[in-house]
Length: 489
Image 1: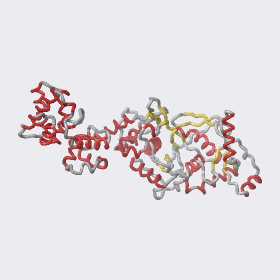
Image 2 (image 1 turned 135 degrees about the vertical axis):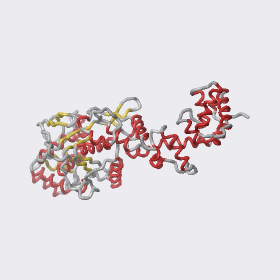
Image 3 (image 1 turned 45 degrees about the horizontal axis):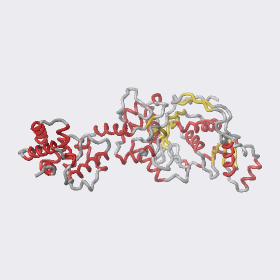
């Protein structure tokens, strides 16, 4: 059976992101939310949030609030949702829509498309084990499919709580995927599946189908792991006589394992939740930009793209069907580019939440501004700024010479530099930087052979920010104290 594309040319584009409030928002879900949001904005449509909280054992209100707060922080602003007043298609929590699902389940049963199933968990487990032994696809054997009305009533009156099963079609189903083009599901891929559990709560596929239809979702855009769900949902749509949305399935996001192989992105690949990236000091604009590029590219070839530009340029035609590999190095590079664009007078405000207040309590505001200027260009995240500053200040407390400078030439460089600084009448950043050049000429030393010993003496590091900025921050008195550690009297 071929499923025609829906005709949405003259209809409002309405897309949704439907998270389960069972944990933190992770990269895959966040990218799906961003893609749906951008598709809506690019097509003058609506972006809807629906909370899929029918897994009562794992769903928690705190996670719902966290998810919504995280989306807003990211700039993924939704038009309708559980906390948006006057949203027209509520409720937007599945746990508040149980009567709606029951109505449609009863309709399917009445029309012969679904039935009550009384099989126990033990019976289903034995059937699954038998299928595995015989190398068969584990599918429900249809034991309750043809129970008479009298048999059904007898079991219900006996207090046995049934599930509601859908009668799966036994024919091929072909549909057009907006990203993957034509896809065919072969007959017999699934057996009769559960629509409503014995506790009265709907399964994912049933609730999603009803909700998407009643909320007038025009495009269902989600990860490719949902392809098998699309098969089930198409059958439900058709047997209920509901108009299908258009479907599009994004490729997976992969992570690189220690052995170089790739697999679906998970915690073993490092940080994957939005909270973790926030805690590391990634800017939301950089994270947004990077996640969009995990499976989509601009026609211009540009990689640094503002959210406003992405709203105009995003299209499904440029979404790749190939999996994307999450690259933490590339993300850090992109974050660095966004950090460079932050004006100097705003940097303290941006980085302040990441600074170690205790370590900096004796640092003046002016000196803190200088420290941020010194280490900003050497940092790729906001937490890097704090790391560099803390390390630098810790090095200032060191009271013993560095063994790396225990050679004749390095001792001469440090001693000569110390004398030049000591003799300066007007010690400022420029004059002290000029003193380094004088040392080089006197000792016929240049390049890294000259600069690295001085940098180690002042900062404890061989590489780092512009030495002139460091000198400016330290000042003559502190520089002399540091250099005196290396002078043998």
